[in-house]
Image (cartoon, rainbow, N blue to C red; front, side, top):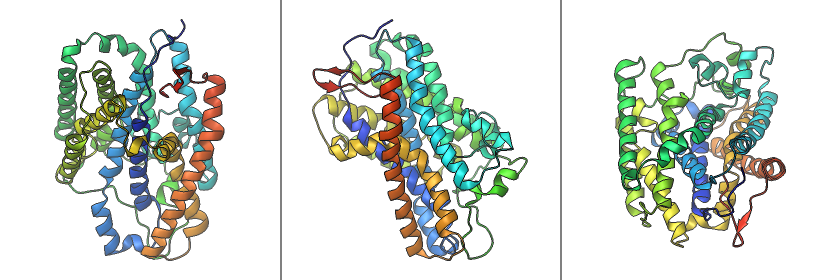
Length: 405
């Protein structure tokens, strides 16, 4: 089958907004994965981390998952063969994933003789089994790609069912999906073993002494030498288990249908952003099962749908500007390269020395700049050439580029 000639218009605000999600993940990772001692053992660090908790990065990941569903539906052209669709999805994920994984292996001296430490990660199946989530973690941000693989695999199969939902019931269907998510996480909280308190347990694993180590614990040879590392079942099911995140993707699909079929035409961001801020604030006072995505899911979908509606209405804000679109273009590579960069900086620059707040800020800045530069190189020299050569160059409609999938 061949693709239809007409595609939906571009949505630059969604591309630009991707950057904020990737940057939120970077901020949390810098706090946790840059072992700057003795700063990380200070009261000041604990105060900062209390203000920048794990759910900041988790909200960024939720944004990615909902946006993924939105963009896949928006850019999918009826008549595209499944073979072409799957080839494009594979080419979009795996080259950047494999490159950043290889860089991490090089800087962290991962023992390749233990296949469990890297084979599940390379295949992007390591979050399906709890012990693989940690033992085979490798490049930590890659856990989310396991969920993306599931999303992409099921989308063509589920699309006919999504299209059968009457236009008048799209919002109702989205509300039912949100209710199912809340019920699922409530079941995890009640039935499954795991932390029941509201405290933030996603904190650095500190080693003895006031001298910075040469390896952050998740990048150390000792970490990968362990036979097994237990994972909280409740945390695993709530956060990294791919099936648990699947509703977020299809909420994005429903949001895209609602925008495409004029069921969502709101262009004011005031209410969606206010709801997102309020729901994020509420994550401080709920158990970990609800911190990760459940509370912020509805306003996240509303923000994404509103940004799309603004683009269609010709409203151009900050996210649609050229610098933000560039940052959005490199955001996937930035998301994937940041942890290898932090591992390299730790091993070759931070380790063996003592640092305070100034040292942490300086090395965080270095990690940020290097991650942006390397992300730009990966996007321009790896992602774009591969997609252009093997997935087909995006066509244009009336002189405008189509929406990148």
